[in-house]
Image 1 (cartoon, each protein chain N blue to C red):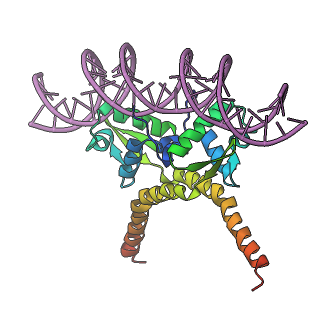
Image 2 (cartoon, rainbow over the protein chains, first blue to last red; image 1 turned 180 degrees about the vertical axis):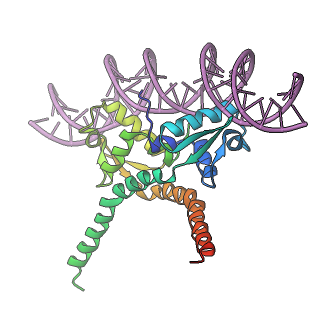
Amino acid sequence: MIERRDVFQAIADPTRRMIIQKLSRGPLNLAGIGEDFGISRQAIAKHIKVLNECGMISVTQKGREQFCEAHLGKLDEVLSWVAESRKVWNQRFDKLEKFLDDTSSE
Amino acid sequence: MIERRDVFQAIADPTRRMIIQKLSRGPLNLAGIGEDFGISRQAIAKHIKVLNECGMISVTQKGREQFCEAHLGKLDEVLSWVAESRKVWNQRFDKLEKFLDDTSSE
DNA sequence: TATAAGCACAACCATTTGGTTGCCCAAATA
DNA sequence: TATTTGGGCAACCAAATGGTTGTGCTTATA
């Protein structure tokens, strides 16, 4: 198995998705992120590490605290992949339309 | 660890993403999907199983062959999650805009 | 009918994942 | 200064992941 570190891996885990949404409201330190999760601080720290390695967030030291900020622009990669996957799909609809158009005599 | 079977899991693996894109051009049987992947047929079959369990594709028996069809509409769940995550982000931009608007006297 | 094609099932494997606990360190705060 | 508070590091764990090989079964095809 190979360790994958991309956006798709970042958003694969539900906890990480919640973290991203939480961070979408603004930067937070680890303790702040960990609130309302029934999960240990270490588990959160690991998710933060993964998100950072995936390029989804950046971490800034500030005194003894560590503030995390989401890079929501990174999600563009997901959007463009979805768009790419549906490209032919849409073309097929276009073709179907054209076919129905061409074959309809009434 | 808990076995997660959702769209995010489906698209987390690069091989599965390629399979989805391949299927976006139309249904294929397992052998057809497996072409051009440097991977065993069994590995492909496992990915197909996962994709099916995630609801990303459906499989139809046809004689001795098994045709797979992608459910590209399922990707809407990804799009809406991304949109939801960026909602506040956009609002923040709006707020910033408003703030700049309100505070600019020149 | 003999053979090839398409696939299922099972066993096996190394690595990753997602979580835990325990200990410890440095920076704020009372 | 004593004590919280925020967090790092390492070890450990069970389960999931992504792959392999081998065997065998059924459906097409030569």
